[in-house]
Structures are given as C-alpha cells and as structure tokens.
Image 1: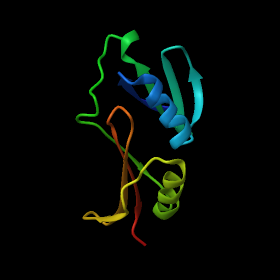
Image 2: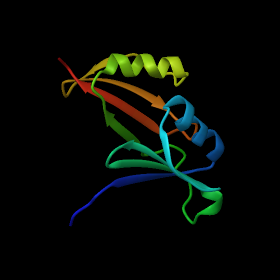
Image 3: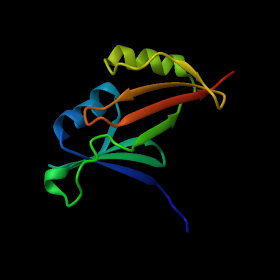
Image 4: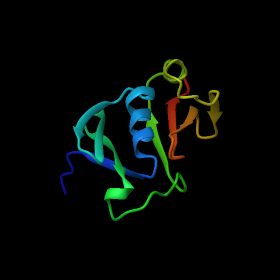
Length: 119
C-alpha cells in the first residue's frame, strides 16, 4: 500500500458555521469546494474536509468521540494565533506524555488538540 494523502471528513449539522470556523479561525487553505463539501489542506499529505450531513448518508457525531490532534513546532505561537483569530484556545498545559498541549472546539463540538514537544 502506497498512501499519498490522508483526509479526515467531519459530517456536520452546523455546516456553514463549521466551514467558516476552519476558514477564519484556523486560516486553512481550501483545496476543493462544492455546495456541500469543502476540503482544507493541513500540510502536503494531510487534508481535513467538512461535509454537510443534509447532503450525505452519514450523520454528524456532534463532537462525540472525536479528537483531531495536530503536532506544531511552537505551541506558544499556535496559542497566540488561535487567540488572535478568536478560536478560544485553552491555556497551555503540560501533558503526561511529555508535551505541551492546547485544545479548541469547532462549532460542531469536535475537539482539536495542538501539541508540541517540551523543550
């Protein structure tokens, strides 16, 4: 198996609000856009998509049982950016596995974790 990219799709009840959140609060680049589906670029090999559950056969999980975790180079810079965009990050805390971590929640209730190694 030779996987080239990975895409996580979030099915949403609050589709418009969730799309706007990823565009403005996370400032992600749109790589594909349709009336009911938007794909965002996380990096060269990872994507995150938002789908309107009204147009699919899969319902929203309403933020239950999902955490999207992303490693960043500098947790302080990421925290500052997320505060500036209004994403409301949690305070930076030390995680038991030796990292610094923050969380934000999208309008659908999905938890996004940002972390970096303790230096």
